[in-house]
Image (cartoon, rainbow, N blue to C red; front, side):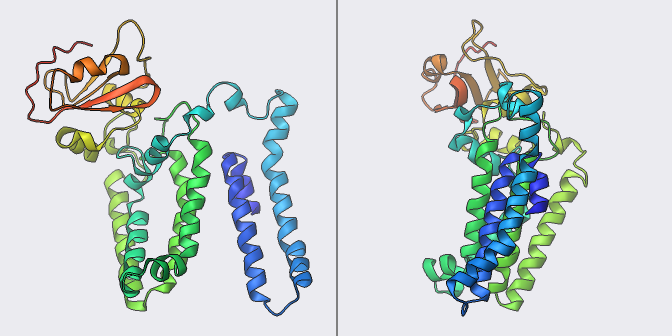
Length: 324
């Protein structure tokens, strides 16, 4: 809790991790001393868990106290307009974990593969009983998944979504910690042979992923202003499957930061891979309907902040007469 409190001075949502650790510690104490009366269990929890938790809260609160004293606001980032609760949406939550350009799945593939393998293996061993095979055997892993999602919610409020990062979102780095911990703990429920195979597979997948993006994420595949190869493939061949937060699409398409408003006088249109033969368009929601009507095979998807995507089949020959 003390260690995570220091991390929370930089990333405030991590204070929720302390609550999870405190709850887990209290649970462990009650399990280890089942024969003790309730009053003695509370005494142990009060003597061990509560002081550490309170100390962690004090440490995590130091930046808030400092900024209140020096600037008069608890969080200068939020006060400066760099965060908005209105941006906390399911689309952004999905983006943080599953986006093909900056989501956790891009660079932490071993974690996702491991969790999937563990749950499927347990499901098969329990003759496909979801309750006994997954819920009962892996309640801690499930709790860690929900913890990671809960920790993610405050991060969704940032106005700079396609922020500078190496390989994948900086938020996803520390949101992966509960998932890794839950995965490692859940491995003990597997037989030794399956556990060995799963461990080797997870490590191999992650090593290959690290090698692909570079040990320190310095190659072109790690650049946050360029589309990753997997997203290029999907955008060219199956554009309807990938509708990222508009900021991701615009900045990676233009290879630079900066997002115009969709309702200005110029009505900007962004086309992938080109205006001549696009497979995906991003444009103002106000004109998306008229553009989509020119191509019967086009599909329209509303996006954040007044934008809309129009997905075109790669073989479509629609005469859209597009101009930026």
